[in-house]
Figure 1: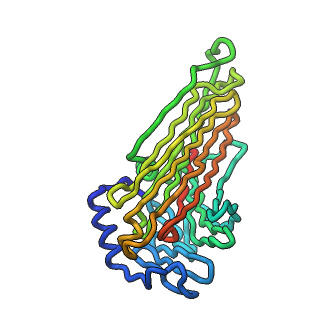
Figure 2: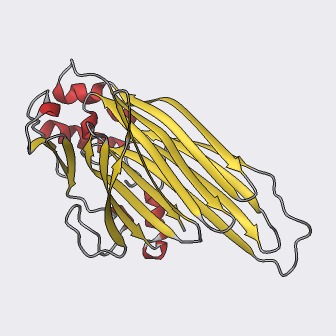
Figure 3: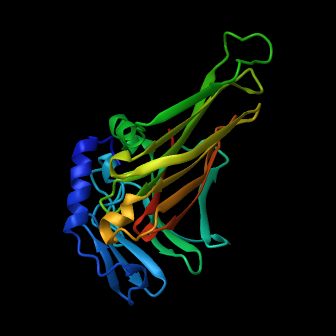
Length: 308
């Protein structure tokens, strides 16, 4: 989601919520094919144990693509559109779903992954994946999509190289960023974690140098979201640079605003937001998240990975 003007989005959020006609406070127990919630941008339905998010906004729209793929239908796109069903892990009442990707060689890529179906009973999620060449995306659009307005933290390692730097030495830079959002039905990014890792490789050196990492956090406070914990770790190795950010968030008024004052607080956990680059130009990313509490079925995760 692009950088936003908060006041405008709060008004849009409230208007969307009030204009929607949910079936009942017990919408989680709706019958097959039941529309649980609907806005101009997404229809949330239930079919058996499956909760589906049928969006009218095409995946990749924020990147300003000439031809983008429409959700669940498929259309012309500059990249490759696919789907993947992922089996998560049950931990008590929580269902933790992990998604990720990797390349052992240098492969510039933009990947957008968003959940289109979720089954809390079987702990399964189906994701829609759009993979693009960064050359097909403008730098301005990419910067807008990856922007985070909240808190940021940075770390770097002392430069290192093996001996003197030859005049004939060439340098290759590697960078990767992973941004993870939970979206609500108006498609506002209500919680966000992001990491970026960087390193350079000289042709005359064996190890990476100029290694750095950063972690970024944000939440949509105007509608009640608060961050309850956060942490991040990083590694600066000869062969790779990696970072992992974690955070938990909650919202007490979110579900109460829609279904009444007795509804419980909504919780989300960004348990893993991990990215890595290697001295060979390879990269990897992985994300684990889960949701619980009132109206958690209204939220769906989105992952955006960039290795230019």
